[in-house]
Amino acid sequence: MKRLWQQARKRPGGAKLLVLMLAALMLFAAACGGGTAGGATTTAAAQAAATTAAAAADTTTTAAAPPADEPVTISVRGKPKENDTATLALIETRTADMKARHPNVTLEYIDWSYDVNTFLPKAASGQLPTLYNTYFTEANKIISQGFSLDITDAVKEWGYDTALNPSMLELISKDGRIYGLPSAGYALGMGYNVELFKQAGLLNEDGTPILPTTTDELTQTAIKIKEATGQAGFFFPTMNNQGGWFFTQLAWVFGAEFEEQDADGKYKAVFNSPEAVEALQWLKDMQWVHGVMQPNVMVTFEEITKLFAVDQCGTSIYELGQVNTSIVNYTANKDHFAMGPIVKGSNAKGRQTALLGGTFECIAPNATPAQVQAVLQFLEVEGYSPKLEEAVLAAKEEQWKVDAENNKMVGPQGIRVWVDKARMDAEDERIAKYTNVDMKLFTPFTDSLNDGSYPLHPEHPVYCQELYKALDSCVQAVLTDKNADPQALMDTAVADFQRDYLDKFNAGEEAN
Image (cartoon, rainbow, N blue to C red):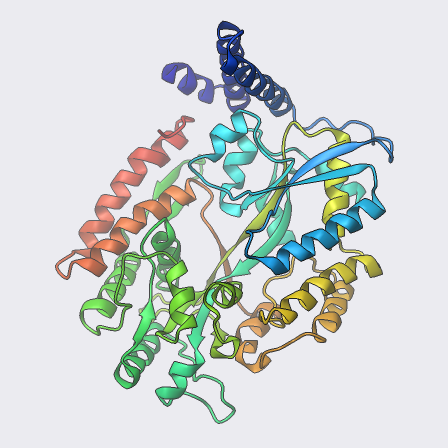
């Protein structure tokens, strides 16, 4: 089976062939197991896989638009947790709105989160929701294997192709075809705890933090916070691929890159460069020379949402949306947060550039034309539309209103999905009604995004999550072992990543 899998990957259209092979095997297994209690379940799964495979084999076919009143059911991502009463109430409102506007559509909310370890088995067996979302980093894998429907014609029919942020749309397109809809984008910045800056005497006269602009200044800021408050001056995650996620951002500002593509389209790992090693050494020094890191270094990014919430860490690479995670999960004071741009590396090749990431919406490859139309109608009810219609703007306003009523932060906005100026101005007018923080604490970050002065760097296109996992080990090593050798760590990681992933990708094979 492994040999067949590898051979199929090398052939043109091999990814689609893989799905068909899997479906055939499942149908065979189901036939052999028919008549048992488990046989019906297996048969259903196999039939679902066959349906998925057939759709994956040709996801570029677009049927004629279905009748407007054709009954249709769609399953959609976004079922909230039971304790998230605000979102539960909002979903009830949206469900009622959907039923009023499109009575032929039945919604089924699914508890969905993208998991790199379980996605492919779910996709191959037809278990994807009609509408699901994932990260930009996964676009290449999902598109190449036919697990996201080609929706180019629908996107153009609805006028989305000219209204969406082109930088985001490019990340989910291939060969001129569109395979998803960008739902949220973010650029990493620097997060700051205003309360600890205050205690350390690091506030301007207007109450805003004195922001560092280079890695050397960031080090000195972290030292002052540690000395004045006893709390951690700087945070860095190390687990679940998040150490690697943060480290790419850190290394970029020192001038490093991670993957290079030659003229023949082959990829090479290059992150054992002097610049990448300098970045890892800087992080090591923050732990062993300056002593400003968080007490427990074996943590995920979730830990900074807690540490910021309880005023126990001063600075971190940060993502704007995490402010409300701190508020929801740890009852943080929203007035204790501030953000600024990523700092520039203090070495010879230092630069300022910020990671561009985000999520996009996918439609399962076995969706019917009627389901595609229903998904787009549902997204519009959520406020996903460039239109300046009252219903669309009202949906966005309702979200901000609910957030404000539940003491979430409202006001600062990151990268926009819709880039039409009239739409952005209309949103700004609506959100101003509910803004509940001092915007001066965030404008150093948001203004740089809006005026185009903030250089953005996309995540790497080939085995990005696996790259992050490899880098996790390097980050963990320098933060737990004062004798760790950054150059040796990076040399080993480059050799392993090239052998285990890039060489196989270059050969048209699937990594194990």
